[in-house]
Image (cartoon, one colour):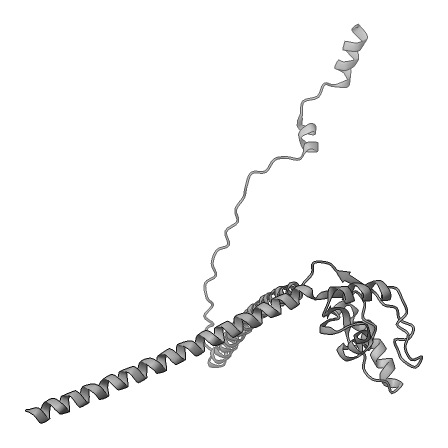
Length: 267
């Protein structure tokens, strides 16, 4: 009996130790999760503080051939740049750009980049304002061999504008474009289904006509009478219509010239 009690106490101690170890491990995991969450919160807070200090400039015209790399090289000398976004040109100006690309290809030049406008995010608002005031309307310059040497800056500082506003607008335009594309695809599918349906109907009618012709030919060769399908009587409906104004005036009773002459003569 004494040995059994010692064994039971030993098993209980082992179970208690295992339970305490599990609790400590769970506590450690919870502390790690809380530590990570606090770290994420601190990072987000720092990012939000940095975003409040940043400034965004808008470029209304991007010279042909300019891309993100070249734009960063030109503007980074005026201040630290965080992000750049260049919007591709729309389809209305694609023909003119394609003509320019063809001429450049004939001359051995590279294909022009198709960008119409852009946004540049500087690390500080003061740098963004200074760049916009300093460069707007000025010649890009640089090396005379550069294709942007004679182009001019069209840059403006956007007050109270954040990069999140731009991303929201881009997402909205993308959703609208996808919706239009889905509508066009559905309309094209309906047209295709309607066309295929008409094609099947025409094939069925042509096969029926061919069978009828073959049947008539066989009956003619055998000397039998042709069986003509009874035609449905055509129904012609007539609706009462009003007479034209000219006919109504003609049908009105009019006084003769003699009666009119007697009346006016007597007066």
